[in-house]
Length: 112
Image (cartoon, rainbow, N blue to C red):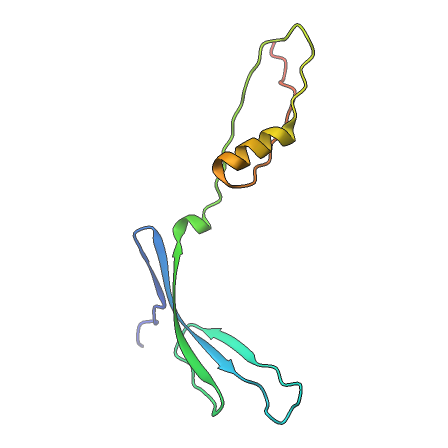
């Protein structure tokens, strides 16, 4: 029994995938013909009207990571009421780091 074929590998901080894109233009006898496309890991067996394109994808591994940043800010009891605009904080963070964030304001638990 032979070893299974490998269609990808990790190199440094990138995921490299070697695959095949098979394209068929559709049935020429149909006035409303629609092309079909399929992606396969191994080299495909082609029918007469199909064409295959070798595709090599390089994706950063960071694409598959789900970042999670948690910040807790404790503020001493103010003498006047304080209003925190969570959407303004989220917009400021988004403009600084370039991605959407979920900002929530919660009352701290009172410790005994």
